View 1 (tube, one colour):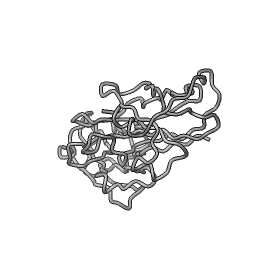
View 2 (cartoon, rainbow, N blue to C red; view 1 turned 180 degrees about the vertical axis):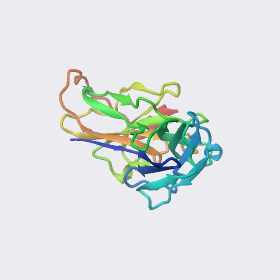
View 3 (cartoon, rainbow, N blue to C red; view 1 turned 90 degrees about the vertical axis):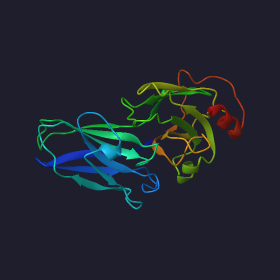
View 4 (tube, rainbow, N blue to C red; view 1 turned 90 degrees about the horizontal axis):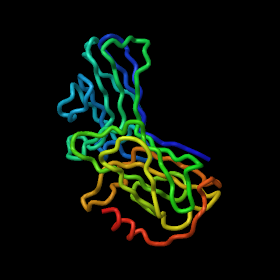
Length: 244
């Protein structure tokens, strides 16, 4: 079993002045509470949503849908971002779409998603190696990003951090590559199912804000060339105190 959940966007030019953007969020999330939005900027850089050419907020009941951006001018580069935390100091873009200056209606547009994955041969007895996105899109002020590991498949209980078994910060200066989650408390059991999530932002206590999940990867532990080691133990409170 291997399953991926990722905030998704895609885009298609309707005509020379209009762009249709489709989106979907993770199951069970609340786009309105998270301040989810889609914005478009002229140029190739993310600015604040307030500085965008147009910004559309996603409503609570919109797990998936489409929005249209009007009044575009072909001959200019545009960048489109799906973000969280609209008009707050935790505003962050987690998926992007590029509309190049000379795009045609039939062109496929470049999409970058903040997904995280684990491959079977990079899972050990009490550690794993996760692959971060090719480009992890982040906004303006430094947004603390993190990964967390749970038992079982993806569920809505993960939005409050229930039963988390390991947490790691993402290096704020790294946008891509691999991250090692070491010393996972308790043995990663063969043939058991686990879910690794990628989140953006902390709560007011400085701990991971589990409501801000942008991607998950559910996997089963098989025997691999690095699966060998010993048991470790600890508590969730220890994890949270180690995170800061």
